[in-house]
Image 1 (tube, rainbow, N blue to C red):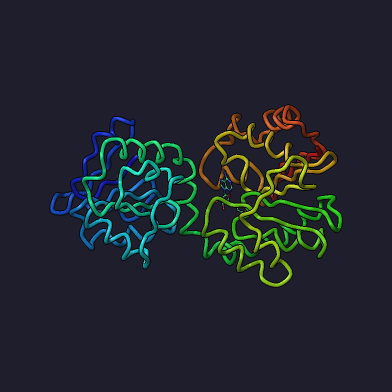
Image 2: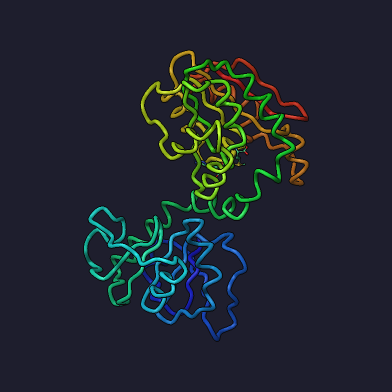
Length: 327
Ligand SMILES: C[S@@+](CC[C@H](N)C(=O)[O-])C[C@H]1O[C@@H](n2cnc3c(N)ncnc32)[C@H](O)[C@@H]1O
């Protein structure tokens, strides 16, 4: 895990928490990285200059944690185009009240105009927050810059998504989730299955993907778009879950399958999909098919059964991967 530190901020507490510092000192021979790939957080020190701006906007968009001190805090509000708000008692960083001048911008950026308020305890809390979000941050920094073009880039695959969704036995009036919905490519087909009286909810950790999905869901899918962030966490709440290109990217697929079983009603179903088979995908990425792949049949079947699913179909064809399981 790496924290990009622009300028000379105190970093001992960050390093003590096991995070690596990626230094970037103006004047020294440390160029600003071109992208946020591999960066888990950003610290803008009091001496931060406008040169850092090209990274601050993308960090805010991808919800990469940012801690901005002194002049860095001013730069943060400039990049955000808004003043921050007070942290509030529940704020994970400012909640203790140790930084009375501190403010938050969005969900993941904090400004401390009085740099002395960034004491060891506050930096330790920031490091803890960064470490706890590292998986999600990596996902967001990867998908955020791709979100706006996702729908158009993969439009040719839409018929394959429609055919996959059609394999689900959803009925009008039922509730369905599209987990890791991305730009919402499956939402219209899901919406068509459950009809006007049903509900489709797309869920994604990448805010920019939800923005793209909200656009794509205009018209018949508008109800889904409005409710994108409101995933039901209630036991047996949904009748079907569609998840394309998600399970093998999750750090703990077994936990996810159990949680998905928990929210699915008895008789409901799960459809795992990818618009290419495992071998084709591995070859495209220049690697061999791994026996550890969670989607490999000897891994996936027992994982699904242990989580409370019954495997009805397992297909790993050149043109698609599809597994249908019932609760
Ligand atoms: C490969 S894309 C697939 C998007 C979409 N399902 C499609 O097929 O076009 C994976 C998506 O999963 C989202 N994602 C990854 N981990 C997630 C998680 N833990 N919870 C929700 N969404 C997640 C990513 O943000 C990304 O949009």
